[in-house]
Image (cartoon, rainbow, N blue to C red; front, side, top):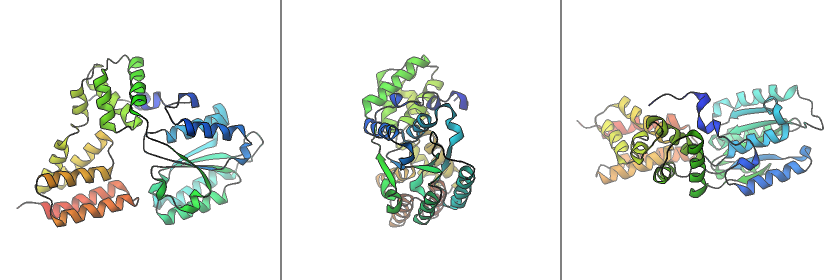
Length: 324
C-alpha cells in the first residue's frame, strides 16, 4: 500500500468548516446556531455525545470558527481527556491557556475541547469538573464522548448536552460519492455500499477506508479491494489471531490483533465479541477463556485504556489456549 502523507488525508481535506457543510445532525446544528444568536457570555459548557464518526469534533471546530473567525486557532485548546494519569497535565495546560486571557465583549472566553471524556475514570471526571468550575470565567469547555452514560451526573448537569445520531446510509454513500468525483476516482455503488457496511456508518472510518482502497487500486476500486485493504472483514482475521494464541506466539497475536484493528478501525469490545463467536464456532470456547473475555470486555466498557487491556487479554488467553 502506498504511503499517504498527512497533508493529503481526505478526512482532513474534506472536513467541514461551516455549519452548511455538516453531513446530517440538523438538530445539533440548529441548537448551536441558536447559541450564537444569543449573548455569547451566556454560552454554557457543551457536551457532545454519540457514535464515533458522526461529526462531534468537527462541529466543535466549526463552532470555534463561527465564534473567533480566522483567528480561531489562537483561542482554542484541543486535548484528549482519556488518560487519567494526565488529569494534572490537563489542569496545568488549561491554567496556562486561560490565565493570560482578558475577556472582552467580542471574545468573552477561550475554548477548551476535550475529546474522549467518557474514557476517564469517575475520579478523573470529578477532578475535571473542578477544573471546569475554576476556569469558567475565562474558558468554556466542549466535552466529546461516545457514551453519555459514562459521564458523571455533576458534569452532565453543568453542560448543555447534544446527542449525535448515526449518519444514515444514503447520506454517507452520497458524501463518499462526492469525494470520489472530486478526486477522480471511479467507484461503483457496490464498492460504496461495501465501504459503508465495513465501517458501520462511521463517516470518518469510511473516508479513510475509501482513500486506502482508492490508493491500492489505482483509482478504480472493486469490492475485492475493500476486502483486501481491511484484511478481509471476515472470520479469517480472527482465525489467524486464534491460531497465534494456540501456537503460543504472543508477538504474532499482538501483531495480528492491532494490524486488524488499525485496518478496520473496529473497537476493542467488538473484537472481543468476534473472538467469542469464532471460538464458539470452533468449539474452542472453554469456561476459562469465556471468563477472560468477559473480564476484559467489562474493563473496556468501564473506560479502561484499550491498547493496554487488549494486550493484557492476549497474554492471559495464550496461557490457557496454548497447545502442547
